[in-house]
Amino acid sequence: MGSPPEEPERRPGEHRVEVTLTRGFWMAKYETTQGQWKRVVGPLPGELTTELPEGEDFPVGNVNFAETEAFCYELTERSRRSGVLPEDWELRLPTEAQWECACRAGTTTATSFGDTLSSYQANFRGEPYHGAERGPSLDRATRVGSYPANPWGLHDMHGNSFEWCRDWYHARLPGGLDPDLHDAKSSATRSEHGDISRVRRGGCWADDGWALRSAFRLRFEPARRYDHIGFSCRSRSAMKGPGWSGFGVNTLGMLLAALPFAFAKHTAPRDRQRPAVPVDGHCVHTLRRRRMRLRPVWRIRNRACRSVTVPRDPVNVVAAAGLRRAPRGPAA
Ligand SMILES: [Ca+2]
Image (cartoon, rainbow, N blue to C red; front, side, top):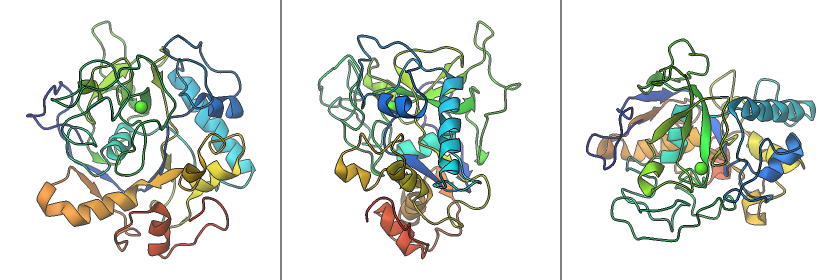
């Protein structure tokens, strides 16, 4: 987690730390959309703008931190009541560590696409990163999933909208075991104005390419809102037990496919097959193949996943792990 000293455009606060994630989690493929928000919560949380036009498949923006947590809470409650989600599972914002793990998708380069970034690969404005080909500048948000996915099938981790993370912003990245600074308010780093902030990640349509690097991080006061800052329920972590070893189905996939007010409606048919990605299975696979050569920052421990081999497809991950298949949900 973090960037190496030689990474172009590196900023303070990106020093590398080693992180161990002991629990698996699922990540939705896209930023949370306006259509999803309306189906789960109701009216959009903030005004639309010239750069954030209305659209079912456009990301939610102008949403403050508390509203993102309210969305996750409401979706969790509905899902539990409907029986789709077990009582000890929940939807929430990702921690910074989870977000960066998912963004990097096993890579150690500046972005998940390599050490350069073109606006053919992500929605940003202005200068491409580190000598990449200059591409289009939309100067606005666009439909989620309009740009290529990262190696784990997650879209728009770089660009389109910034994404809230659940941690209080600390100048030094948290390392260690399952770092989660959601409640670490007292130690949060204050700005020059004395404010404390949550974390936002990923860059947006209004940035140059360098701000979309995997390690780039910014602060933002939780009560504030801006059109280019949205969020994602990308993180679905188990509150109890090791990852998905005790619940070996694509629960988020089931959830997204089963709940008409949730994530499934806006997705294309091929996307409905895999609305979520299991992060730890891929991490384990990647690290097992490349542990010595790349010296990855990430080290994932999950007993259930260590026996998984070549889990390129999330559905096959479940099958390879010998776990129970979902009786319904995303097609294999
Ligand atoms: Ca994004």
